[in-house]
Length: 235
Image (cartoon, rainbow, N blue to C red; front, side, top):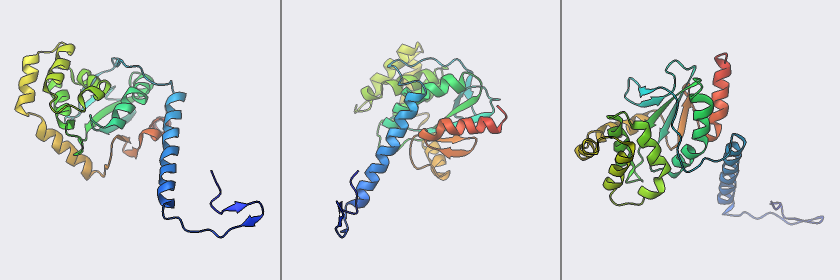
């Protein structure tokens, strides 16, 4: 990085204000965070494949109706606020998410709760959330969740996702007619909108955002926060 003081040999030139300096600093900070994020993935097992793995853990719904996977008696609870159409959320799922599942969820150390947080800028976010909820009616919430995240690039740009999501239901082996009827009814739309408002009320401003035993962290800080919570719990 060049020296902003303008040094050339021993000669010092008076520094001039650069109106773009805040912008450059902001870009630099984002690059540093991004690099740290990628290094975290690499050190913890590399990048995920194009096929989602099934989770070998209990699944169910919380008292508030959000779907979880993991031991309900686990010492650490991780809540993920996420949007199905958010590119960063899919990136997390395909990479660090699999590592969290392998190292913490499947080992009984973490109860993982998915809190839908549909964003206004993503028109297919609500239909995707509805697809997972409607699949959940047939005990296939996490299967649909996986298909949506792994194939986000396929359905995200579509003007109508109905046939694609119905096809995913078929891949999961659930009753497509029942699934399609659920989607057409808008049964879960208000539930998802209420989930977004709940996240806003809790101060969530973007996705993915995580709570580790109530402490808000970003994806890059998630593994460290889990380890700290486990240590605090004597694990």
